[in-house]
Every structure is written in C-alpha cells, then in structure tokens.
Image (cartoon, rainbow, N blue to C red; front, top):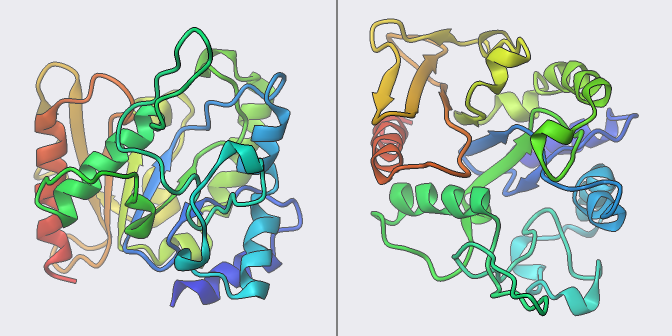
Amino acid sequence: MNYITLNDLTEHNPSNLYIGKGNPNSTILFIGKEAAIDQSTNTDVYNRDIKNNNLQWIQNSKDHTTQNDIQNWSPLYLNQNYNPLYPYKGQLNKIEKTTKSGIGNGGTNSTWFYYQKLIDAVFFNHVKSEYINFHEKAFLTELSEASAKYSKDVDKYDRQLSLTQRQEFLTHEFYQNFPIVIVAVGHYVRDHQIDIEKIFNVKYDSETGIIPIGKSNFINIHYDDINQPKKLVIHTNQLSMGISNELIYELSLIIKKFKAKL
C-alpha cells in the first residue's frame, strides 16, 4: 500500500514540503502548476491547504484516519474538519460562483471541476457526479508550492526555489508508485525547464507524437517502457479553462486503455 511510502515521505521531509491531497492508495496522480491562493490576504487558507500539509498527513497516520472518518466541510467550523485526505468534502460538482453579497453556491474551483469531469469519464462512463469526489480515485499535488491568486503574480524567486526543491521531492517512491500520472500544467514545464522524463524515469512516445485536440488542447504521452509499460505519464493542458469535451474524452480513453492492462 502506498501509505507505507507516504509515511516514509512525511518522516523524511524536514522542510515540511507540500505533499498533496486525496487518496494515497489510488492509481492516478494529478500534478498541477501551483495553488491559486493569495498568501498576503489569505494566510489562513494557505497554511491550511499548503504549509501545514505534511503535519496533517503525520496526524492522519497517527490517528489511522480514513476517508469515511472525514465529515463534510463547513466554513463555519474553520479548520476543524479540513483534511487533505478528503479536502472540502461535500462540495457540489459545479464551479464556485459568489454573489455580490458574498454568498457562494457550494461549488469548487475550475481545476477541481475538470479533474472531477475526467474522473467521472474514466470510472463512471462520463456520468456526472453530484459532488466533488475525485479524491476517492486520485491524489493530487503541485509542481510548486509558491502561490498567488494569479500565476503572473507569484514571486519568481519563491517559485524557482520551490520548483528546484520539489523536482527532487517528486522522485520519492511515494509519487513514483502511481502508475498513471497526469501532468496538467500546459507549457509550464517548458517555461521553467522541468524535465518530466527525468523526474518519472519515462520516455516520450515519439511514435504517437503530440496529439492535438482542437485549436488549443493537446496530449503528450510518456511510458517507462514502450513495449511493456507499467507507468503512463500524460502531459496536457492545465485543466482550468478552455478545456474541451473532446480533450476529456481522449484523455479518458488513453487512461482506461492503460488501466485495463494493470
């Protein structure tokens, strides 16, 4: 079980680097760019979601916490029922919108909405889930834990420092154990010289090449072994905006085909 390697990761993480959220024993790992949290105005949220993440996983291990133990999230209880094993449990499967009076609709951010859409396509034949529950079927982490509301506002020094630390961090056995990795960051890897092949010990499938989807979506496929692959690494768009139904459909076909061989 991947919990064993997760415990090793938390114990050998002196800098308390961000580990991630979701089911550690799942087969799918989502990797995003960085969290969209304004650290200057939302310190509590950043601490809860990113900074304290390693300590939260250590506590989960001590308490033997399961996803069934976690109650639905409520902002009324602040941090009391937040848990990275099933963060913000009970969110509705729609993109969050807030009225001028500050009242939300119980939804989620656009990235998690599309993560859910892909998980629904892979596991539930495209049937839309009522709630955000992809954390039951996947784990997610980020390439950088430097953060701002908008990517353009992230401190460049903080980002580069985090990217350098985390590229090594992601080589830990915990992350390597996921047979399916979806690096949903668009051209972020190119812009910051991030070597996906080196991190996950895979090779680009040059025979398939870049799979263009419409005008702006794409899929790049990597395997650990072209002939007898045991690991699939997909590089695609950041799943937050401009995501077509065709991209979700094609991604789901590739993932389901690979899963069937595991």
